Image 1 (cartoon, rainbow, N blue to C red):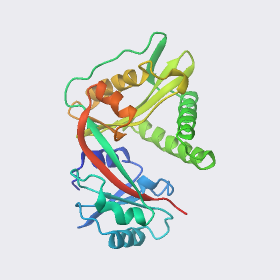
Image 2: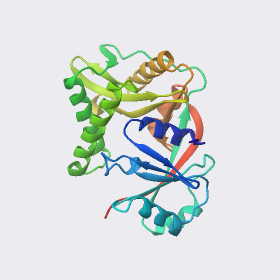
Image 3: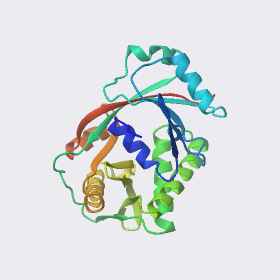
Image 4: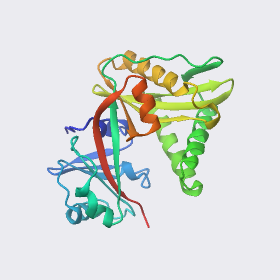
Length: 262
């Protein structure tokens, strides 16, 4: 299996141990059986930039006959959201174009703010705090609590299992006993991908994100020295600007189409 897109390749790497990828002549089918409501863990990635809504939706529905959602991706690093996606929008799809950022030069390293520390999560209490922060920030971003809470709990349980298998690490930023920021990083020989970068609202704009990125890049350099650190952000977002300030640079756009259930 060869994925051209740096973003998609790192997406699939992050799912290792949880998902299986079926390779076909025209597509990759990504399945995460334990998390059927994880829309981006149950998707079809087409091998080129051609957009054929009727055929591609039918292909997804044949691959996932029980799914309530439809998630499509294209292994086309040169693709951008545009008029070619209009038919999908008319059919109820959300088109997401994310910036894939890579660190190919030096990191602008940052120490934790005074009085705070960054370290890997250790034990049930740390993981419970990180899960609570992920839920808190997800609700802030507009997700409905009754749906997002169980989803986030399953995601964090799965990612804790991956960390236990040695596939990555999850860092927290601590103000005393309080966890005020966290992120995960998973790596293989090609990429080291950051996940779920969050900071509690009360502690934002203090450099916590930069300190966590510094810890993650240092971990990757020790454990996977040839891997390229990768992070994905919404195009034009404040988070993306922070990552660029730390030394990450634009590599490609990753385009997906999602039609949620209902």
